[in-house]
Image (cartoon, rainbow, N blue to C red; front, side):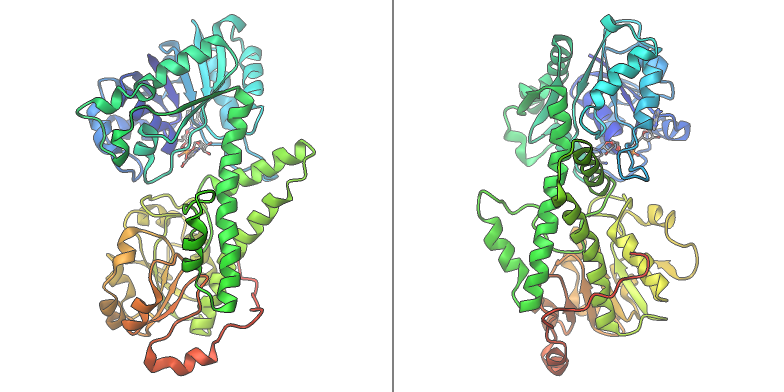
Length: 480
Ligand code: NAD
């Protein structure tokens, strides 16, 4: 199948490369000419496992790059739209990039083609897409519109795409159903998994990727509902964590007890500084607007967002409790990306927390295995933020260590070395990466989420002083 993918960001590039990997001829398009030039040279513009090798495998063969939507569309049987759908000022999804692409696609349609929305969009966007294509000169008999929401996660994007929990296709006619089935056939029949050179994955034994066929509106709704549910799980456990912390329970034990119920499951039950990234915050907002437009009172979504923004504020309160005043204090920060295994700092809670700490006069020594170049683009370019070469370089001579992203390497630090490098033995962990006893045995005072602060034996007198209050006062943070 000849496929065009419009937008070569996290979703578009991953989709284009993976479609080529499963046997299609793909043109990956972006209006950012520098990005296209870099991709043509073989450079992936972001950190994502397996993408560089797959790009090398297919670039110049089944995978081509172009800055022209018209050229790509005129040579394709299917066009995926994967451009950004950011949050507008009013909270709803800004669909102007999608509309701009639709206009360009409309004027380039010459033969039968399916236009597929893969970007995350509100329910009924397929209808608007169809209307825009017609208004801009596309012949009704030559095109179909389908929805194919994307569920990949940054950090595991390639394996999520190739080994999906499910593929959702929202189709309202025979042409789009046939084309969509054809595109995903190597995954749904399992023929891709039997190839010698297939990207390895523990689910390799998977015989066939499940496919769920719905109408377009249901597919659109699935994506928003899915993200809202996951965000709700995170906010739920954070609310429970706050109770746990107040009464001196251990949220990790509570999570083990909750998550082992097969009706709930252990995933997304991680207490901490809350969700971030380019999807959840804007998608939950957009879904709330959709509910409002449908006259449905979905107040639960507002509560999910309120709890989430409160988590970062609570974390800052802990930093102040641990350090008293912040002006002039040197704080080591491990983690800048919104989650581990990615360099994406969009809506990263780590960045928001750093910005609030800077406003209170703290000095930051930050380290992230991948996100430093992107963080440099958003954090102040002055001496208040210094970037370290590794985790140990970051903590040297600092008043405390703050863990803000759950990179695997941050969960296996040499704690005795950390203790010896820090000026004061204080660790404030926004991701609950450690058992409390490991920290205190290494001589560190440990603050985490949903667990009481813990102190090494020789500092037990401070522990009594800071016993949890029934209702901790949460001071509004500057900038959060
Ligand atoms: P992104 O910002 O990384 O990429 C979007 C790309 O589209 C950019 O490279 C931009 O230059 C390009 N673009 C914009 N207008 C264009 C135009 N007119 N013609 C050609 N190219 C154009 O965004 P992303 O993270 O890949 O997200 C894309 C969509 O997928 C969003 O709706 C997002 O919500 C959704 N999504 C994202 C993820 C994720 O983890 N990032 C996961 C699932 C779904």
